[in-house]
Length: 501
Image (cartoon, rainbow, N blue to C red; front, side):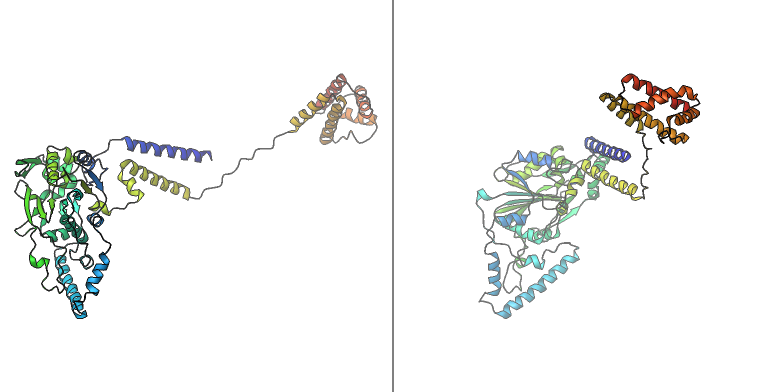
């Protein structure tokens, strides 16, 4: 049992020491983009959020989607009833016309979906489920209620419903900036653009090593406008590995795309955005656009392909901070509240369990690993068959001497000297009978017993007789005994006992 306690004690001390060592050891940099609010690694957003939060009118980081923000800003009380009435209770269309509409709509969606599959797009921009669901019509918001919305992700994953919500937010007068190295196909299809990548795209995950191999910087060119002069920003090419592939019809939607030719009910396509005007803001060293601005209704949409600059590293490296704040100033952050959304990208698909928090921090992660290894070792060593511990049986202790001493002290305190002589003689008789077979309490005459005892002790009978006779007379009469007589008789009994041995 003591060994088991020592084992668990050593195991607990080892676990604590391992946890403390991991907690206080220098943390290596992780160059994986996360864009988390509390991530202090190079490609987190802790420093970015702190600096921007103290530089704009109002700044907030939320874990909401564009759809949630849009639905919170419109009245949805009569949405379902209006959609049901428009299809089932409209007296201007007969039952045959309505049935014909649904058949053509299903065929149209199938054709569009097959076209998107040929482009190897993992999202369907014209999904039947999302395309048939119309969001409430947006209304232009007053200046005081408008917002600037920022989305920063390495890979921006958007559903068709999010694209519709984005269009609604822009028509409300809000300003939205989407910053990513890769945009989902549903957004590219709606805005008629695509993203292309440089050869250094594969080096993003090995940013530190790739920068050490080549410290050459690239240039981002920003032309002059009414508020700022022309500027050139030197950045590492690994931080802007993609660019926007645009054409003459980028962000320009044709009339037949907004109003399908064979649509019986003439319902406008809600996944296409009508752009009033657009312009390129920033180009890379080869003249390829990395940031564009589009005016959609009263709102403005910004597409940026430099998300790694909107991080802790990007904020602290060179003159990137001025580039970031110039982009934010285009959104009117001097007067509009700024909201950064964290609900997109690969991080949004992660589990929210407690183990995710442990695995996210290296000290807690190693503590979890150590605990699991300890449990495995404990199960391994305790799974084998263990022999029951053989108890050590101690020989019974001889309590006779202690008992005799206790009785002697008791009689001595009571000054019952005669009773002590009787007890001493009784034990003497018992030992003589056990060792030599002589029963001194058999009731025979005292002379006979004296002669037998003399033979056993080897003493002359004449010498032994006076003391033996005096002892028998004392024990069989009512004559009291004093202390001197007790000492004398006990000494004689001890002498006889020694002679017997």
